[in-house]
Length: 255
Image (cartoon, rainbow, N blue to C red; front, side, top):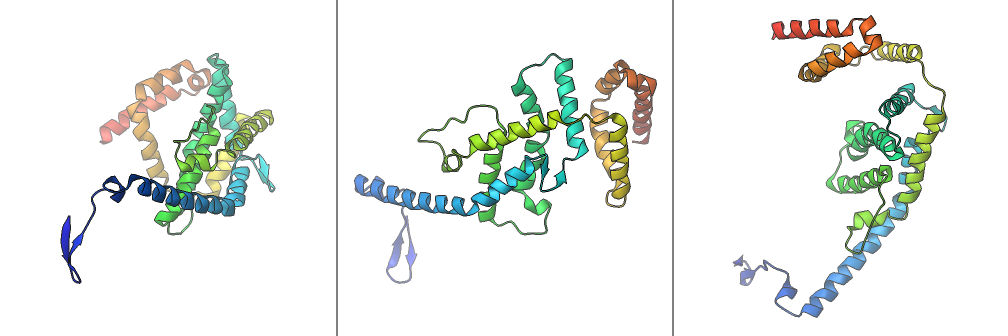
């Protein structure tokens, strides 16, 4: 392609790599040199950030890191998942591991890692975004139960933390095991905890907006939820199915 140029009058643009029309060996040598320089800088950057990545993963996958106690809600939720697995005769540890990973690390923490601007008042540049995507991908691989298979054609961001992922995986497994060994949280303690959290943050959230978001799911699956409530002993005692039907009826009239 040719375009006007102030000095020479015309300027040539290559629509394909030069070595495709020139010396193939010369092009390969140049590409290899660029790749080696890129990899060296990539490893140097990784070494600089390694301690911070390790500290982040250690903090997330620890039940009592630096004096911070594990939130009761996490223990209660993980116990619920174990109870459901027992109830449905699911004894494969990989299934339980995947459930727990999907409901907390992969649903919450990955989003925070990739989008720190959700938590902090900061600007995330494109370079920072690319770096955080590598950390987030490493985090997701650490939560996986499948074998981490890599080859010469694997992307550099996968190869970068290949040697660290087995250690990170052991942290995740230990984290789930430690939570499982903790004393169970009673329904009364959980209700008291939720009431206290509601009191502490009562002015920070729009309750009606939250209820509206929840109802968007309830309205969509109302029949399934009512059927499940009718089969649950505790729900029947509190007549939750009947109360939910009243809410659905009222909302349909209001709309």
